[in-house]
Image 1 (cartoon, helix red, strand yellow):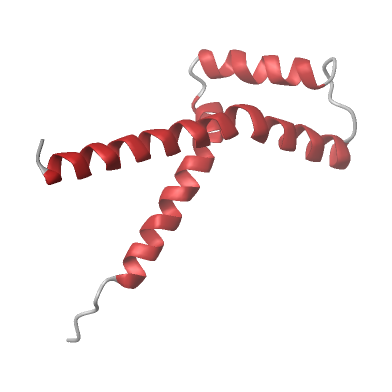
Image 2: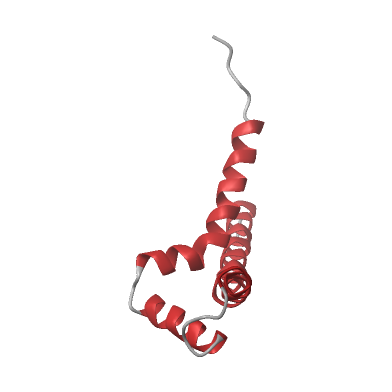
Length: 96
């Protein structure tokens, strides 16, 4: 295996691990924060508490609801936007 293949394989492995970690954050941590903030601002959830909220969120996720998928993937998307912003500012600028 060449050095380029090893480097590419390592990058793919690292990016896959990052995606999975941030997906878990979106699936587990983010709903806790959303429920806590929503309860603090708007009062009790209309359902039967956090587990009902989480069940509804996951059922809509598996039903393919685009807004829920965006919510779950938002930690990874925010990280990618941050990376692109850093990349854009590090690029050498060509003067006209």
